Amino acid sequence: MKAKIFKHIFMVAMAVFVACFALTMCSLYSYFSAERDSGMKEEATYVAAAVEENGIEFLNHRKTSSTTRITWIDSDGTVLYDSIADPGTMENHKDREEVKAAMSQGIGESSRYSNTLSEKTTNYAIRLDDGTIIRVSGTQYTAVTLIIGMFYAMVAVLLLAILLSVLLASRVSKSVTEPINEIDLEAPDDRDVYPELQPLVRRINGQNRQIQRQMEELKLEHAKQDAIRREFTANVSHELKTPLTSISGYAEIIREGVAKPEDIKRFSGKIFDEAQRLITLVGDIMRLTQLEERALQPQKTKIDLYETCEGVLSHLEHAARKRNIRFALQGTHGVLMGLEQIIDEIVYNLCDNAIKYNKEDGTVTVSVSEDPGWVTLKVADSGIGIPSGELDRIFERFYRVDKSHSKEVGGTGLGLSIVKHGAAYHNAKINVESEVGKGTIISICFPKG
Image (cartoon, rainbow, N blue to C red; front, side):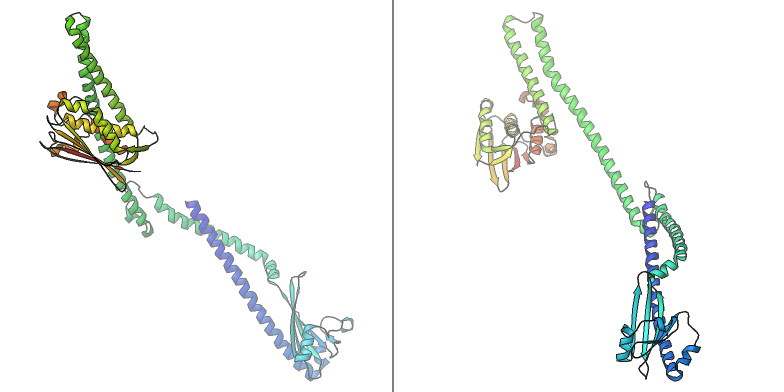
């Protein structure tokens, strides 16, 4: 940053120098040109008056000027006198611009440039009473000639300007960057810097506080996630250990020949049931992991939520009949874009829970409704209900509201976790209403798109 500031200040200083130098040269050139023209006009007037009075005698006795040239021209253009050249060798001047103007108007002037010599010749002519012309000519160097003549002086000034610019740029860039480099980024103090840097220091302080808050939040989140991981590991271990213990026990009885022939079929059935429970648990864990990591990326399709509910209720009809629970499906054929497998899992788990945690002879009402942009699934049961203090936890993995009946109702304890992550996968909103002893209503609003 210091090099960049140095470069910019140096360039600005040099640009100012060049601009000031050019402006000064132009002003001086214009001023001296005007002064020279004015002097030539005064000299021409003076010489004309003197020649009117004294004639050629004045010109012969006048000292030759080193800066001007005087020419006396007859009315026919013949040169009568010239302060530099021999009149006899000079051509007729009748066609000269300044001479023609003086003959017709009394006064004439002209300027001629020499590109070769980089010079400008100015002529000022006055007509006398006898018709002759007095002309005063002067040579003036152009701006280019002046610059060439001042070359060494200009080089010296340029070197001095460069040196001063370097010193100025170095000091200014150092004064700008040193306070910035000395700022303590961990604990900056706006009293230690110049006023222009105080907003930066305050902003750094604000960002430090924000970073500190975010780090604390990350630590808390990490601790929370770590606790959830440990709890999940313990729950999985427990859920896996129970069926594996049963399978191992029954298999050992059969292997040792202790089981009676008539009990072997029953023990085999127990082994099969516990194995199925393990398969279901592993499948739920894999599905939950996929939903959490959004590993499922198939193309979404149009899904008629009402038809999906019909299929799920038909599948669960036997389980509901065993507990004498009545199903009711109502609403409209709401269509949404989603993954059929996940939507089916959501409806199945909600309805399965509504059966498991219901009362004997209870009811489960499933309804589908829609409005612009949304399709809503609502599952209401007349079951045991959920205490208000536990509503926030029902979507945690392996969490059960009624732990004493968890073995009776079966399942893996992952159903509502799958519902939660499946809804999140579809950007859906979940709402739970429940009253102990009267039942629970779970609503999920799916976006149509």
